[in-house]
Each structure stands twice: as structure tokens, then as C-alpha cells.
Amino acid sequence: MIYLDNAATSYPKPQGVSDRMKEYLDLIGAPVNRSVYARAQDAGLVELQLRERLARIFNFPESPTQVLLTAGATAALNQAIFGYLRPGDHCLVSSMEHNAVMRPLQMLAQRGVSFDRIPCGIDGALDLQRIEPLIRPNTRLLVLVHGSNVCGTVQDAAAVGKICARHGIAFVLDAAQTAGHCPVDFKAFGLSALAVPGHKGLLGPSGIGALLVTREFADALTPLLAGGTGSASDSELLPPYLPDRFESGTPNLPGIYGWEKALAFVEETGIDALSAHEKNLTGQFLHGLEGIHGIRVCGKHGTEQRVGVLSVDFETCDNAQAAARLESEFGILTRCGLHCAPSAHKTLGTFPEGTVRFSIGFANSPEEIQQAVHAISQIAEASVIL
Ligand code: PMP
Image 1 (cartoon, rainbow, N blue to C red):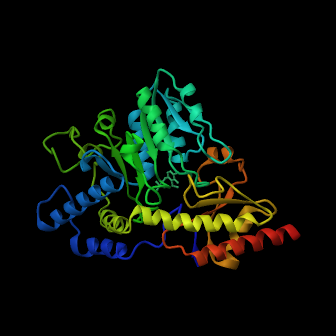
Image 2: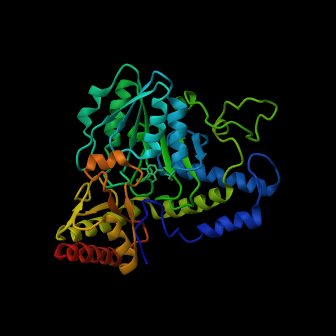
């Protein structure tokens, strides 16, 4: 089996991640922030280490208490978007966004919030010149997908951050496809908030993620959840301090233990090494696809400004059939369709047929990429003859 669906969720996980989750369930089993016995303190410590690791990995310049743990990237983006925008506000997004951004915005459009899409080219890259003409006096937020989950194109977040700073607009980055795959620098990008999932390039389990927020952004943010925090229990109001204000309810503790272990692997290996390995495989893959007839490769055809998410449109056969054959005849696992991002497919010219997506992870090898290229050529070129 060749797993090339890492953009959906990473597989396998680094060694020790599942053991650590089991260890929590079998040997710790205690809550955080509520009880004071030793095992509860262990859980509290692991949770803090997780926040500290995230702060280091993303060069977050403020306190680890502003690393808010969420149920995933979708939950983090919902917190940022619903929590920040008010009726009468205007928001900017790129035309490459995932529905984790577009669906909240479409809901808010029913409640007096307006938005505009900044056009991107056929390669998925944002046209920076198009941003400023779209800014209005009531533009309060810009939300940007850092790496496309359809074609892997990575946006120039630092340049966008400078434009936002010049106009006093909050800047939220969706790093679902870049976190763990290439450098994501909170400070250098001038972010107000960064949303990341635990289960993709950060190699943890699903059901957990984080929203890293500046103090200024947090002060303007309404919590989406309210409930017990284990703190300030004399009051029926949410505490004002972080992370408690945004973390009501008992958290995903097996997820916290597993993710902390996964991030130890990410830190020990280093983002640069992970990125270099995946870039090499991406280069090999793109090069291999160059000579194949009957397919169109979306997005950037070189390895710069991209991560290892490759979308292929089979021109001579049905994409769903191609994906089914990849699994049944070659044991290659991919994802076919529109990948929860209709706006991105419209930008890339692959709507409504969608694409077959191959997404690379840390555990993939050059041999696997070679086999994938071979399988694609067999399917595409056999279909040409038919
Ligand atoms: N944004 C992008 C670009 C994504 O690819 C995804 C996951 N497909 C998400 C947000 C949402 O992440 P999750 O499903 O982990 O909440």
C-alpha cells in the first residue's frame, strides 16, 4: 500500500504517538486544570509542553498561554472568523480558500458581514497587486490559506502581512497544509492569528488543533464556547485570561498526549529537514509527470512556492475511475473530487470535475513516488489509446 493522502490526514504517525495516547488512557486518566493530585499535574505539564512546542515551532513571539487548543483547524478558523467579525464588517479572502473559511463567511454574509475574494492566478498564486484596491474603510480582517489543499501552491504570507499592517487589518493564516511541511513564522508573517490542525503535517491524532493569537487579537475576540474551565469557579462569567477564556470544557487529553509526542518528533527532525525531504519527492514527482500524455497537472510545476500536494486532472478518463484504479491495481491511496474547496477549483479551472490529489508525507520514499508516476502513466496513456 502506498499512502499518498497526507493532505487529508497524515499516515503513518511517528513511533510512540499511539503509545503515548494509550499511556494517558491506561496510566494517567486525570483531568487538567481541575484537580491537584500528581497525575493531574502530569497532564497539566504535558498540556503546557504542547503549547510551548507549538509556540517554538511557529516562532510565536508572545506567551504560550495564547496558544489556544481547539478541536482542529476548522474549529480554530471558526473561532477566529465568527469570534472576530461583527455586522457591518468587511473581510478579504483569497480565491483559493477551503470551506473551513468559506462556509463560516457565507453564514456571516446572512448576518451583515460582507467579503471579497482576492483573485489568484491559474497556478493558484495570489496576485498581491489586487489586494489594496479591495480594501474598504470597514475591512477588519484578511483570512488566507497559506498552502492550497488542492494544488500545493504556497502564498507569500510575509508580503500579505505587510499590507495588512499598513492598513490596520487583522491577518489570520490557515496553515492546515503548511504546518509541519515548510516554515511558518508567526512573527515574520506579521500574523494576528494562526490556525493549525494536529493531524496533518504536525503528525498528531485527529480531533485536536490550535489557534495562536496575539494579545490584541484575543482582546477583540468573542469566545464561541462558554462553560466550565476549572478556574474562577466562583463566577458564572468566563475568566478574562488565556487560555481559559477560549477553552471551556474538558479537553481532548489523549489527543494532547499524542500530539505532544508527535511534535517532539517534528522538533527533533526539524522543519527544514522535513521540508527538504518532501521538496525532493515533489520535484521527482513533478519531473516524472512531465512526459505523460492525457493528464493536466494543476498549480506550480516547479518546487518553489509549493508543498507536496499535487493535483492531476485525467483528461481522457474519469478522475474517480482513475482514483479507483490507482487503489485496486496499484495499491495507491489518493483523494478524488473537489477537496472541500470549490473556489480553489474554479480558480484552477478544474470545477466541477475536480482532480485526483496525491499528497506527500514525511514517510514517503522515492520508490513510492516512482511507482505513483508509473501508475499514472499506465492509466492515462492506456486511456489515450482507448
Ligand atoms: N484548511 C485547509 C486548507 C485544509 O486542507 C483543511 C483540511 N482539509 C482544513 C482547513 C480543515 O482542517 P480540519 O479538517 O483538520 O479541521
